[in-house]
Length: 68
Image 1 (cartoon, rainbow, N blue to C red):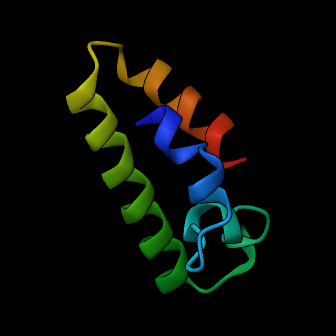
Image 2 (image 1 turned 90 degrees about the vertical axis):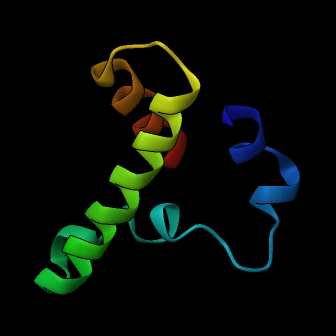
């Protein structure tokens, strides 16, 4: 999953990643946008958790580095 998310094809994709797109200003958005962002991020974290035996803290750290 990590290699796919960071692949050139995904980076150059026509739709873009909403997590990466909003990461710098999501805190300044209204609550509905922040909640949606959190839900999407949490969903991605759950997908990663299902693919690894790493602790949640480490999964979240990895996701933050990927998205940021």
